[in-house]
Image 1 (cartoon, rainbow, N blue to C red):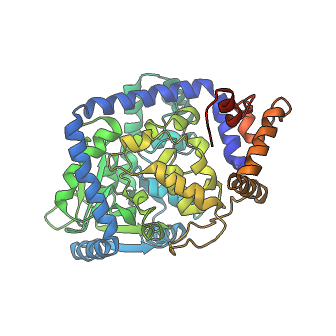
Image 2: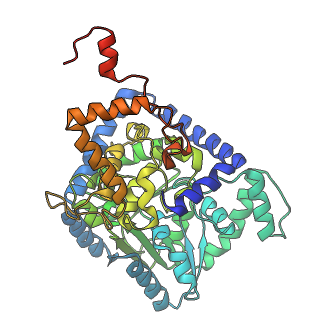
Image 3: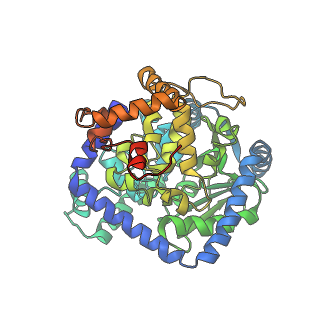
Length: 476
């Protein structure tokens, strides 16, 4: 593990109260999901359809993106392409400057977190206000989201009450959840009305109609996308789907997998800017399509299934590692199993996220609950191999993850090479195993990372061959 990740994990494991609370909330989300998907046969049938929809979309990604762009532009949506997060941020800044806007209201968006748009705009004198309640709480605490669905999952009610009272001393201290939410709602209303620009994410883009779909529970996304004169939507290029008919099954499975709801409170279908006969809506709609390594991932036949993800968070809620260390320990925008495979592919193995594939027990719980059947354990194994392989180009010329081979340790590689040689020479292997049994009490107890949480393995008193001979069993 990298020093940063190991330090984050060590710190997280000491936060007993936080981890207990986190596991309580995660267990509640899991129970809601289980209740919403209690019909196994119906769930598997829906899963099959959604898996096929996402596989078809990623397989046809370039063509569908072109079709979407054409239809979206025909509808009046201005489409921008960004290869990197810096380019995406510069596009947002350009739109803000074009309208001489110094204030932005934001709906919850993991892509905007990936871009780091808040800090970027603030460095240019533009204020960003998170309007999702969880994101707003995290922003007040000057922290990052700890979960992609429940950003403030690590915060207890009393901590939130103290946080809000500290930033709004004019409000009386109150720990009642409804009262806290109402106080924030009153504060947000004036911000929505005054904001010249609103920014949101996108859950799905429909190529057939050029439609943006945004799902939410609080209505802040709808306010960000309709009240301000300018609406900016940001999304990864993988969110495209082919047809409008593909949307209902995906929404059906997304909401049930995420929070156990049959459907979210708001499903926003954005087709165009405000038209003359519309009662509300923005004068301009801008969509920023971010690549940031996604097209490279889509070019690898084993890794491309990473892009099937619909961001429900089910794998996170069922991951034993996440349940122990929480989201902040990962040090990435997206934590948990999906973050452990997506973030290294985007950032590379020589970045801090390069160690995340090691943060897995390979228990397979993530793959069991994934609504679109992403084989996360198999991808983790591929990434582990990718991080230590010797050659920078694989045998079948597949695209490689940036920094491939950077985790390779010469001494470790030499040890395994010697081990492999011994295993192919029976005489040497038998002598070494016999020697190990004779020195079983003299082997070192400290074996580095392996023995940090385990006892050192101790050879048996006799080799297998010796044991078979005592039983008069022919082992040749």
